[in-house]
Image: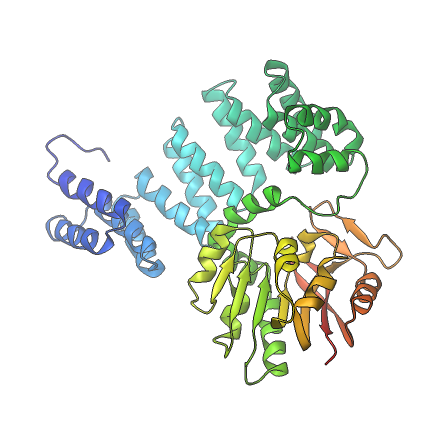
Length: 436
C-alpha cells in the first residue's frame, strides 16, 4: 500500500506518529479517532492505533487494532510486521514466526524487514530461522560485517563451529583488531569446549584494554580457570535486553515459581509483615509483587536499570540500587534487615564466601537469608561455571558456608528452579536464620 502526495490521510498519520513518538498518547488517540471516522477501513490508521495501544499498556487493544489492519490489507507488509513484532514481544512465537515469514516473502529485498525478521527469530530462539535469513541478507549485501558477525554467533550457538570460525577468521583477516570479532571467536572456542584455543585472542584483547573486566574473565576461562565472579559488564546487557519480556518468559515459558514460593515462606515467617526486606537481584520485582505492601521497607538491588524500571511499576519497592550485589552487601550497615532474599541471582554471583557472612552481618538477630542455587554434582568441585554461563554450587559447601558465618538453623530444600529447553533445572533453596 503506497501513499501519494495528495493522500488526505497523510497529515493525520504524520501527526499521530509524531504524537506517539513524543508519548502524547491521549492526543494521538484523538487524532486517530478523527481519521477512523473519515477512513474506517484504512489499515495504516489501525496499525498506528495498535502501536499507540501497546505503548499505553493496552495489549488487547493493540492486538485488536493490528489484526484489523491485517484484515483490511492481508498482504500489506508494514501491518503484518507490526503484528509479528507484537506477537514476538508477548512470547506468542509460533504465530510470530509464521507472520514474519510471510513478511519476508512479501519484502525479500528490504533490509529493514530482514533485520526485524531476524530479531523475531532470535526472540523465539529459532536460531535456524535467523541463520537462513542472515544468509539471505548476505546475498543482498555481500561482505556486510554486521551480518557476518551475527551469522557467526548464531552458527556457534547451533554448534556449527567450523563455519563460525571461518567467518570470524575472515573478519579478523580484514580487520585484525576487530574487538567484536575477537570476542566472538573466543566465545565460539569456549562454546565448542576448546577454551585453550581462545588464549591468543584473549591475550590480544587484553593488549587493547588491559583493565577490561570482561576480557579478563574470558582470559581466565581460556586458561582453564574458574572466575570467582562474572563481571557486571557481561551481565547487565543480558538483562537489559530481556527486561520487557522477562516476566512472560520466566513465569509462563519457564514455569518460574520461586518468587511466589519464597514470598509465601516469608509471609509465613512474618505474618504481620513488620519487616525490612533486601531483595538482591530483584529483577522485574516478582518477589515484591507477591509479597505486597510491608509494614517496613522493601529495597531492590539489581545491575540492570531496565529491570528496575519494570520492578518500579509494581509500586511496592521503597527504593532501588543499581549496583553489584557483592558491593551492596559489603556497604550496607549492620543489623538493618529482617529478611534478605537472592532468588536466581547467586547463579551469576559466583563465589559466595564473602556474600554469606556479609548477609549475616546486616541481618537483625533472628533474621532470615533466603536464596537459591543451581546444584552441581555431589562429588565435583564446590563451584562450577556451566556452559550456560551460570554458576552451580555444591549443596554441602553452601551449608558449610552458612554455618561458618554463624547461621543456625540452616534449612535446604531441593527444588526444580525452572525449565530449560523443556527440561527441569535442579537446584536448592536455602533458608538460613541468624540466631537471636
